[in-house]
Length: 131
Image (tube, rainbow, N blue to C red; front, side, top):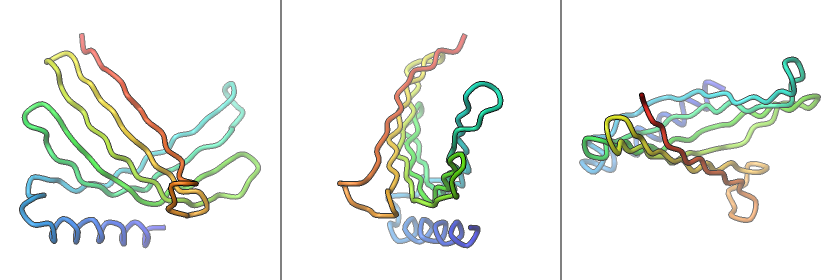
């Protein structure tokens, strides 16, 4: 698992270096995220753990753009763990000191296939108001 993460990090770093000054303001990062579902307090339904590497860049003084990807480990109740690949493209923009708009697009492979016919897509859009 760590080997896959290391290879993905190397690909991102090489891509950034080969792109030259276009990504000079980007910052590479690692994001490990788990999303899990339950019914009630004790019935596990399933979940997924993303092991992503990515790059982010500022959008002026008030925004951020990021791209990340890597393996996704799926775990569903009473089934074997599965592995797919996933990627996220997202942005966050401060519209004021108290108001933030954000969005994200998620893509996940099905049977590790990168085809538009089987790719699972999801979106997240939201606003945050800070008091």
